[in-house]
Image (cartoon, rainbow, N blue to C red; front, side, top):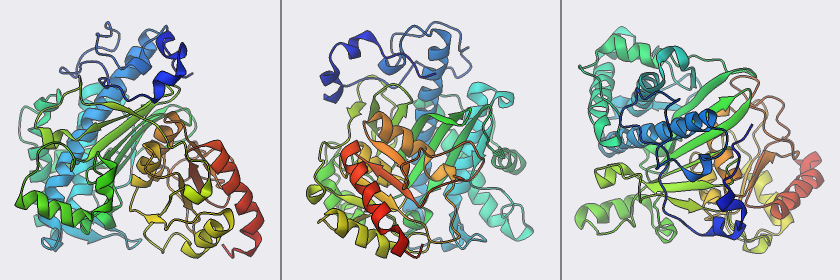
Length: 432
């Protein structure tokens, strides 16, 4: 059951559209704090109510998840800064021809270790994208050493995020075990975390957009989600500048303010609120008191003024069908082609209105590519379904089984209905 909204929000729904500065959750400076203790005064407002212990536990889970993703983003930024244009030996290709890097393995190890530390290893089940098979090979010694160094450097910074770091340097086997422990198969019963350590690795290795995506699923329902977007600036106007350009200008003449900062977005199911905060890595210290602000989807409902997103890669998405559909429904703007779940982030905070993805025959969508983004858009006021108008089903394991045609995410029900109707009218001629 979703948390009961607090009375202060239900009195005036208009207040939900006004950005507010709020913390993400309870104080977890000691990750061993029991979940049945009193919720402190800094608990996120969307998680306060009459459900007592259940809501206190949910608040703490969201709080820890945000801190962990903040740390993961810091790790990714360090790896990406040294990866673009060099250190190509840190990039490997998986069986499906997609790239995997030191950051993918490093983030998965860090998230696994921190969640287990905070909630107890026996209580944490994680379904994640990577495994340690490649790192375990005899010819991968240098690659493994890079992962070990990256993980330990990241964990040493845990105190500035209000988390505890290990008492000793972690060795190869401990890190390999942490990666391989993310072996949940998901399903319709119980609770498990879903992690995509670097969503959009192709964008990551090119120095472009990518995301760290973490969600918690309970009995087949996504109950909270966190998206870390290290190259997605807090201010919308800077989206018009190429990522490499403003990173170069930042290096040449470091700016004041936070125009160039990446961000973390998060939401809890049933709260009716989604939030965004800047990356801690750029600040140097986690500030849960004043850095967060509420985000809402765009109010645009006329397709002629709407911006739509689609994947960059043509391998698993039909750009031609999307282009025809956009024309038929009256979309006039050029598509925003973005790597990773940053597309979900763009809709959640009102930078775009529509995300459409229609997979080519034989491609199956994985739950880690959508879980976190779905709950954030929904709580920000948007709509996410398959292209038949049905809810996405996260209860069938690794894949979104039973998906009808594709995935549609919109800023509101009016646009969503127009897109669904256009799909119905065009599908027979799609050859998908």
